Structure formats: structure tokens, C-alpha cells
Length: 91
Image (tube, rainbow, N blue to C red):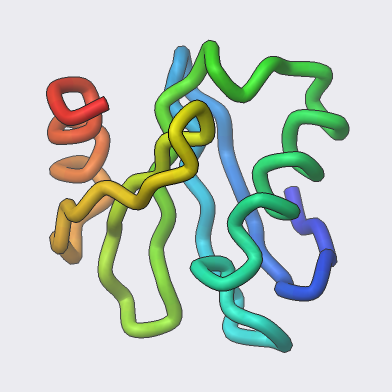
């Protein structure tokens, strides 16, 4: 699904992981992460703290975000599958 906030992105929800891809239009997802998470939660009717959050930035790297603490989680991988596996142990 494609959503526009200050940044533009697509996302998928699979089990308890939300994967966000920055479409590099406008503000980056990294710089707009709180609004991005809020928009996804509103669209899907989910609670942010019940999911693991990963995102692919405009440089093509996957990292994580913890909406409870408001902190970023370094994953530094080019593969979504690796990011999904790593986020389960770093949240």
C-alpha cells in the first residue's frame, strides 16, 4: 500500500513485522518516521507497540525503529529477509 505523509512510502505487514520502503519523494522516511508509523497504524487499525518495524531508506539499507522508545535500530543490511530476522532479536 502507498501512503503519502511528508515522505512517500509503501509498506507491508506480515505477521508482526511492518516493512516500510522509502520511495525517495519528499522528506525521507527516516526523518518522518513518527508520522509514517502513525499513518500506517491509522490505516491498518493496529497498535505500534505490537509490531516490529523495519524500513528501507533512500540509500537502500534496511534498519529498524522502536516506536515505544522512539529510537532507531541499526541493522545495516541490503536484504529485507535479513532485516526481518535481525529485528526479532534487537527490539
